[in-house]
Image (cartoon, rainbow, N blue to C red; front, side, top):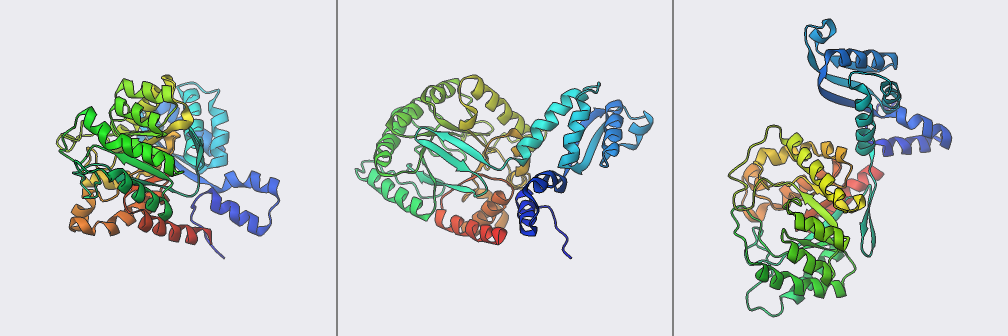
Amino acid sequence: MRIFKFNGLGEIKQILHEIGVDTYGAKIMLPKTAAFLIRLTAMSNVAANILKQEMLSLGAEAAIARGALTGKTKKTDVLLIGQLAQFSALINKLKIQPFGLQKLAGELKENLRNFTKNDFRLSLKKGFLNLGDETQIMGIINLTPDSFSHDGLYREFSNNYPELALNKAQRLISEGARIIDLGGVSTRPGAKGISTKEELSRTIPVVRCLAKKINAPISIDTTNPLVARAALDAGAEMINDIGGLRNREMIKVAARCKAAVVIMHMLGKPANMQKIIHYESLIEDICAYLKNAILSAEAAGIKPDKIIIDPGIGFGKTPVDNLKIIKHLPDFKLLGKPILIGPSRKSFITKILGLNLPSQITGTLAACVMAAQRGANILRVHDVKEVRQSLKMVEAVEKC
C-alpha cells in the first residue's frame, strides 16, 4: 500500500499510465485526483451559505465562520475544499446563482485554469521558447563597472569587452542557459542612474556582437525605452524591465517591435527602493500591480504570449519579504503568465545565512530549487552551471 501526497497532475497521470488505465478512463479520472483548497475573502453570509450547500451537494466541503451560519456575521472568508472535478461542477452550478456568485464562477474557472497550467509557449521574433515542466535558465551578463555581484564586464576605455561578453555568453549557453540577459546599468540598492548615451555605449556593441554569434535569445535589461529600441534593432528579442512597464513609451516600443517582455514589480527606484518598503499585503499587492501591468500591456498591443512576470526579489523587499515570495510563488500562477524569478546572489541570502558575499552560492542554489518546485518557469542567475546541475538532480528524482 502507498499513500500519495499530491504533487501535481503529471505524477498522477504517470501512475495511471503505469497501471494501464484506458486513455479515455484516465482522462475522466485525472480531475478527480487533484484536490485544492481555495480561500475566498469577505463573502456575504448569504453567498457563503449558498456556496457551502452547493459544495456539500457535490460531496465536497466549505468552511465558513460560525456566525455566518446564523446570520450574526455579515461577512466571512470561505475555504473551499474539493477536487478539480467537483470545482468544475460547482462552476456550472454558480452560473445561475445570484449574490455575485455568477461572477465568482467566471473567476474560479479562470484561476483554476491558470493555476493548473504548466506549459507556456513564449513567442519570440525568431521562433518560440517552450516553458513547460523543465525550468529554463536566463544567464546574466552585467555590462557595468559597479555590479553588486562583482562580475561587471564593462571597463571604461576598454575595446575588447564585447569579446569578453561573447566568451561569457558562449560559456553560459554551454552550461545550460537558454536566454542571455544583458544589462548596462547597476540596479543594486542605492545605485545612481547613468545617461542614455553611456547605457547605449555599454550595451549595443555587445548586443550586435552576440546577435551574430549565438542562437539563444538576447534580453536587454533596461528601463530606458531608447536603449530598449536600439537593442531590439541590434538583435535583442526581449525587454527585461525592472520598472514594470510603468513607462508608457516602453510599452509602445515593445508593441511596435513585437518584443517579449518581462514585467517586474519594484517599489520606487533602485536609489530609494529599500527605504520605502511598505505593503498592505505583500503577495496580494504584488499580484495586483502585475495584473494591472499585464492588462495595460495587452491593451497597448503586446501579445499575451509575449509576457513574463517577475515578483521582483530584492527590489523594495525585506529579507523576510523575499522568503515569502519564494514560499508563495504558486499564488502568482493565477495571473496566467510564465514566472521569472531572480534570487541569484541577492543580499537577503547573506543576511539570512550570515555569510560573506562570495559565499552566496549555496543559498542561491537552495532558493532556485525551491522556486522551481513552486512553479518558476525561468530562473535569472549568475551561476548557470551550478543551478543547472541542481535542477537536473531534482528533475531526475521527480522523473524516476
